[in-house]
Image (tube, rainbow, N blue to C red; front, side, top):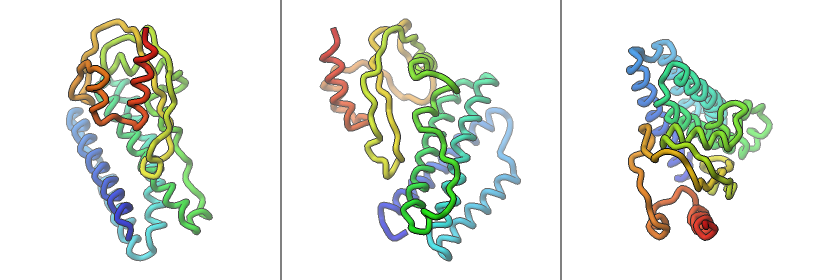
Length: 233
């Protein structure tokens, strides 16, 4: 890859994959298990082969292969999350689903790169994973039910009054793939909010101006905060 931004994104994806490997290894160690040696050798070989192809055939074939693998990874992390819940390891749920979301972004990147190539547009593509916003949803679960469940799992509260106030598009689809983010305003709940898992490092109440000084997750977040507070009784 000659483009510096493309090289940076590839390095970022590689770093994220190594981080996932460490996290999964820690989960397996907690279960008294470890990765399959055969699969380790197999995927090491696949990775080396894809890397070598970059120097022989250019980037199209390796990115096609990487995108196909990433598509499978999304589903595998979702399945792992379901199995973690079924065996009483609910504390791993958010971590596994977050990894599925990151893999979704990887798949979207490789898909976009393949489709940007004149030959890539003629290749049969792998099946696209479901939309990113459905990853944290249980099968057949409505968004409102997902909100209630996630708040209970992550903060230990039960939402009793809430409304969807916006649907935001992904601000950087070239990097993360197209996605929609459903934003809810929760105005009443039962319970005292507290961190329930390792996904968060701090929880505190902030006034509007202090909140706006933080690096918010979306460019439109500040506007939504102002609008939501202005509409509050």
